[in-house]
Length: 590
Image (cartoon, rainbow, N blue to C red; front, side, top):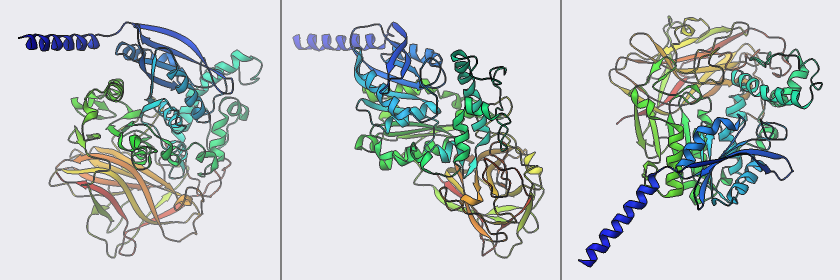
């Protein structure tokens, strides 16, 4: 009887503890808390913490986008038992110093993590969180391996700030680089004017900085403006190759320095999707500790920078798509990592993806999926594949004797960007899945389609195109786009890629083409997960421009910083027995 009474008392005590733990904490806030970096520069942060005795784990965000934007999460996280710190990075808003992307994030991140761990209400465990550039501040801090960093939650961010931030396939990511930089320039302008109203003669009289700030590929009409507001943009143009400038802060060069568990959040229509997926694979294979290699988790949602919710772009992905919440996922990740909660992250399946087409979430053992079968869909055309009105086709049948396809690429008449992985001005160039019908009417776009599928067919994993082609120019681009064509004709873009011909073999050492020579190009279309429903067709678009997402190749081989003249190129695509151009797809059977 006594034993039962004791057990009953213990159980009631456990329930009481659990109930208390579930109750939200009252929150206290400290604003503008100063943190001195090793070089004396002072950064400022807002701190949200439980109004209670004891110590708590710290969730840290370092942002260039104004720390006040983290207020809602700060209160939410503190109410759930975390110290939440949101800091303006160097040179942004209330923090001192000069803003230059990536340059100071490793040292400043290290210093801030160690400062946060030593706070009197901290238990010494620090986790970082956030997306885009805020993901970069995490990754760059992690490669410096501060002793008290215990986890990161990096959402929609890159692995290499040359290959999947500023450039892709050797092409300059013009739309993102200009729109992102223009948005950042406003705070830089405000700070300069506050510092010295006479310091920007001819610039200070400008109205609010508006996109586009730069008239690329020609250098801006006012070079003083770019020098004053975004000198790093000039440096990006001056370093088109993957050289020492980029390698100094490339995450992909330092996976073995990352020693903590990581939750990577990627998205199918996100402009950093390729880098996010490389981060997951890279840390899993090369992380600097067993905890890092075994502690990798991956979540792939739909939109990322392209949007969130049930409808993204012109496609409704159903109510399950709206289940994703970055804030909620972040807190559950740290509940698992720091509090030991046995939630979804305790499962043996570390990967969770959203499968488009069927519009469901699915758990997987790893990424890429081991069961996916690499399948070649060869390009064919009996006459001409120009536009959707041509006879271009895709099939698993190897080509034999077939005529080549030819089109004219004129840099003055580039193929326009329609949707896709875009940021950061959706008003002028809407992102996400959108009907490609207008693009596919052009004669400078080659279109290859399968016959309608007789059963649902899933493509999940990395997609690439092996393309045999030549050009009349010494340099040009080749673009590729994977499309799901619905029975009603709606042509939904899924994923896309580009290669600048001079970088066909190496991002470090460009080599121009010899006119008239056929080359093999490999175009990385990144990845997707899509079920092509019965009656749908799979389509490939091939062209030489996707503007303004990427800068126009002027076909002359001149450096993009100073390119002025252009030539029209005749580009030819081959698909025969000697040149079996093929779209390589990961086909998944259940």
